[in-house]
Length: 119
Image (cartoon, rainbow, N blue to C red; front, side, top):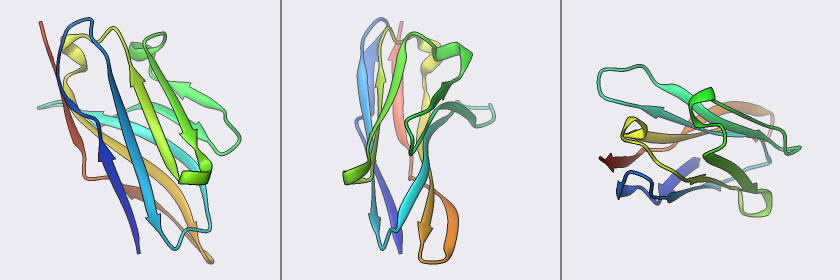
């Protein structure tokens, strides 16, 4: 019923920038939280950034000052602007949303998009 589709990943040199997008579709009543996680090979999935429907944000310490999360609530879309990328930012990035459909509320994941930063 709900689908999250990500785009914007790719290969970039260190110091470069990328912008990720994630759009949710389906019979959505509201979205309470939108976020981005990442998982590097051999590591656990970790929170990168999160934004609430009210606009409050929080970031992992490792990306503060370099990444910016934003959302377009009318389009059910969340963005992640990534600047000054480092090789250690290389990972599969997943969007994650807390979505209400009727009386049901659940967390949904995107399929993931690869971000590779070369040194």
